[in-house]
Length: 314
Image (cartoon, rainbow, N blue to C red; front, side):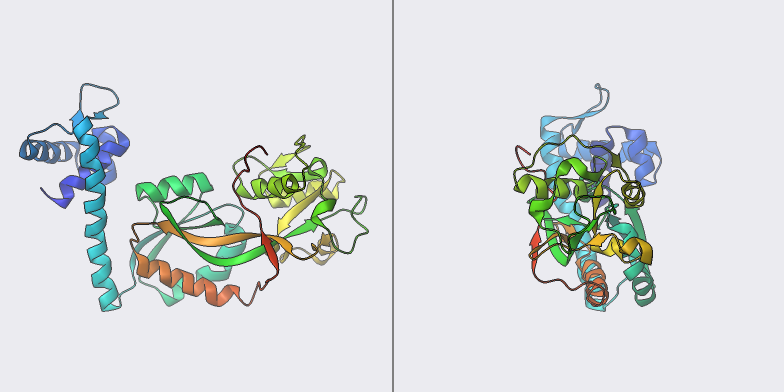
């Protein structure tokens, strides 16, 4: 039995197809099939039911895959230990970031990180929170940055910062004359929201749900804050923005911004990774770089964390 054979088994279990699994493992399909057959012969058992399409795990195969994941993860951990001991920080490092964080946070740390760690091959993907959790579980990414808490027992979270919500209120809106907004002032019916799939939208809904306002006849949903800002300026409603998003607004648009009364509603932004703790030295390196830079940009203490999770009954 070899680690390579177990990796091939995991690939077939995931893709449910020998050809797709071989492409993922960068080997020929006959090579992959032969190695899995050798493992099955050694164990004197069938891991896969090849008569079903797509290919299915046998009952014993399911248990083997569970154990194979542990063994493969632990083998990777050995490499991590050696690299940490040598003080080496390099190699492939796959990072996922949710869409409402990526455009504002990435420019803050990316240049510094790649300059400080030139041997790291950083691969970045923009992913929804749901996609991030799935890819972390499957080992397709090493780490991610998302709004938390996620309440997932398989995901570890380390807080990076707390990002307040800021109101963008056009001249003709009922809240325009207020110096600061109170949560009680909000009405979900005149707030422009991001489209489904964005956890920032769920956070806004949860703010309004907290005050008993659950009528969700939204006027418009959009995939970007820039579009929401433009629609708001056209008089179609107010919107809420994460604080970092407001820093790049022009001076004219900044006049429409309204802060909240304390405690300010905010989202918790964390670096997250699978509980297996693989590549923890790289994860810590990334967190330290972001920690050192973000403190000079955002420093809010009196905040009320709004969960990105959809509240029951909301």
